[in-house]
Image (cartoon, rainbow, N blue to C red):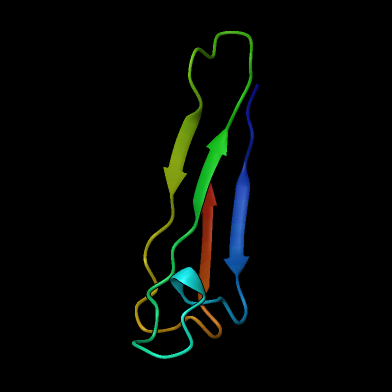
Length: 64
């Protein structure tokens, strides 16, 4: 079985812990895939970090 994920973008991401003030965040996406016949543990993938753009980050990444 194969799965392809196309991560496009995000909008208006919150600051960690619900903070109102502070630095602009550097968002990334963490993906965990559970399941599959031979899977003993979940498969984890992380996107690249988009620096200083929590308002409208864009990745345009494809992961297999």
